[in-house]
Length: 95
Image (cartoon, rainbow, N blue to C red; front, side):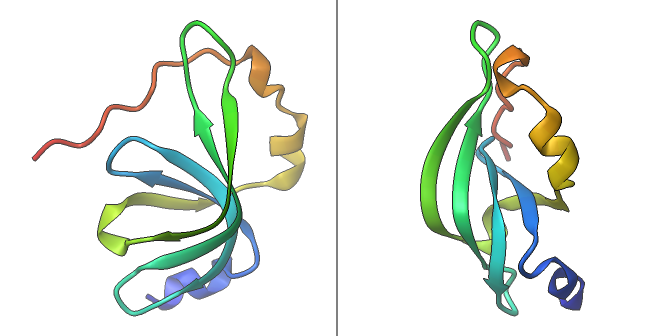
């Protein structure tokens, strides 16, 4: 779990098992991989419209819901015009 330590106070993307994509600043985590993310936004993808960002604020995510965590390069992320991106929503993981 110490590998998450390097992401503290950095912008990260979380892809959850239910298909949601959450972007925010990693504020903390625990031994069960539960994470606290501040200044959160959910990115909702659509084939018809651009990417919609829904503000969430401070968010707690259970570790068993997280499929992927990765650091976001702020310069590249700011340069991308999300309104021009069309994509299918991520489908939930089914067991």
